[in-house]
Amino acid sequence: MENILITGANGFIGSNLAKRLINQGNCVRGLVRRTSNLEFLNGTNIELSFGDITQIQEIEYAFDGIDKVYHVAGLAADWGPYKKFEEINFLGTKNVAMVSEKNNVKKLIYISTVAFHGFGKTYANEESPISNKQIPYTKTKYLAEQWLWDFRKTAKLKVTAIRPGNVYGVNDRTFMLKYLDAMINGKFAEINNGKSLTCPIFIDNLIDIVIETGNSEIADNNAFIATDGLEIDWHTFNTKIAEEIGIKLPATSIPYLPAYVIAYIYYHLHSLLRLRSEPFLTPYRINNGGKNYHFSIEKLKKYFDYQPSVPLDEAIKKTVEWYRSYR
Image 1 (cartoon, rainbow, N blue to C red):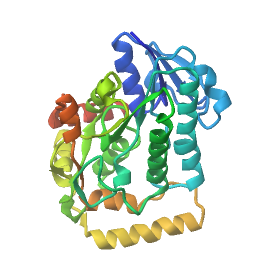
Image 2: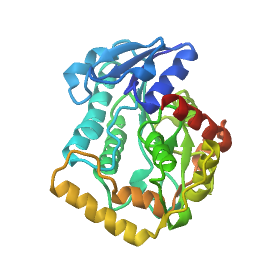
Image 3: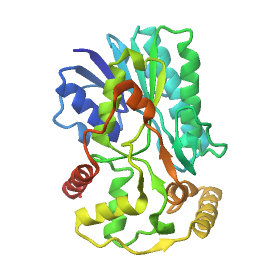
C-alpha cells in the first residue's frame, strides 16, 4: 500500500486512475481546484486537497507524506491562448515536480501526449522527431516533458512519462461525449472516407499502463507511447461505434484539403475576433481525422510484454453504455 497523489483526479483519466488505485488498497489523495466538477469521484474513498498547480504556494501541503505522484492535471484542448497552456501545462508541471522533490516523493508519473510527434506518422516511436508545427497544447506538453528530463538529472525524484494516443472510454466528456452526439444527430462527417490510420487507447488499458510503469523501476526515467497497438483506420473505428449504438454511420465524407482550408480560416477568424466559444472546426481536428496518426508500442511490449486487456469491441461497448447512462 502506498500514499499516492493524483493531480487532476476529478477528470477523465484522473478519476479512472483514482478508482483503480483505491480498489488496489492504496491511500489516494486528489489534488483538484476548488471550482472542479467532482461528479466522477462520487462514492470513492479519496482524500481531496484543493489547490491550483499554477500557484505553488497553494499545493505544497498536498504533497506531505506522499510516496508517488501521478501528474494528470493539464489543459487539453486544440484552441486557446498560448499563455494559458504555458501556465498550466508547463509552469504547473514544474511546480508539481519541484514540490515533489522538496517533499521526498519517490516517483513522478507524467501524463504526456503523442500529439507533439505530429500527424502523417506511421509507426513513429519514442525517439521519432517532433513536429515543427505545434499548437499551444502540444508545444507546452513537450516543453514540460523536456524540462522534467533535465530536472531529474540533479534530483532524487524518478520520472516516467506516458504519451497516450487518442484516449476514449468511461467518463470521456472531452472527446467521446461530443463525438457520439454528433454521430447520433447526423452532424458527422469523415475526412477522406475515414481511410487514415488512428491510434485509439481505451481508458482501462491506459490505466493498466500508467500503473504498471508507475510500479516498475525499469520504467524510471523512460518515456512510453501508449496505444492499444491496433492498425485501424477511422472508418473501421466509426463503423463499430455506429453498430454498437444501433445506427447507420452517416455517409458524409469531406476531402482533406478543402476541409483543412476551411478549418484554418475558421480557426483564425475565431482567434482574430477573440471569441470565447469553442471553434466548430480546427486544423488539429482535421489533421487527426485526415492524416495517418499511428504509433509503435514496441517499447511497451519489450519492457512489459504489454497487450491490451480490453479488446476493441468490448471497449466500444463499455463506452457506449457509459454514454447512454450519462446522457
